[in-house]
Length: 286
Image (cartoon, rainbow, N blue to C red; front, side, top):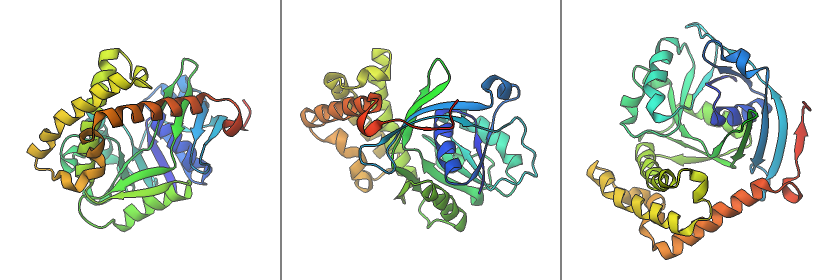
């Protein structure tokens, strides 16, 4: 499959790398002038949990291809659109006259109505998903992050189309398990509220990284998320369909906050561990 990653953020880079190593033809669309700034390769230092229970550290210099223009008659099969929710309208306005025959995977958080959020993109060419990876670029331009073994896909109440099945298959070929969410609209809103609750404490502390292992601050984030659940009900969302998503906010915080603190601290410790199960797997020496 010929795949265009829209932008070169951390999520696009991590999944572009995984799809590339699965045999897909991957390029990145970047703004004019950015290709020269980025150079012809990107460094990765990833905790890859796709195939091992305790994960594997991957240290690699990955040669990448950029394009700074997208003609309306391009031959890409898939465009992966993973941008912040406040940049989605700008991105869809750019892509709408340039979709050609590609499927567009909307791959991130949305707070508005999904069909309104995609603007003029052809609805029949849109697939819906959510990444299960995270990270960022360090001062040296190296992506440091985590790639979890599954990825979220969903629909807006209908069975997946042939296009959507094809997108799922591409991610399966990259070694990722598919988790289906038939009420993807509701799942996105629950996830957005969950993030808002926890991010409120990251904002208060000055960095989300300070939440790692911080039981008291995580407890406040969970309580903030709990206060936002009535907002979802006011939007007409049936929370009974999303019990797993709201359970951490409704459960007693004396149980959930220490558990979340342990989980976040453990993940960070494993990602930093240079030996053992995370022994670096180096490809393509710099």
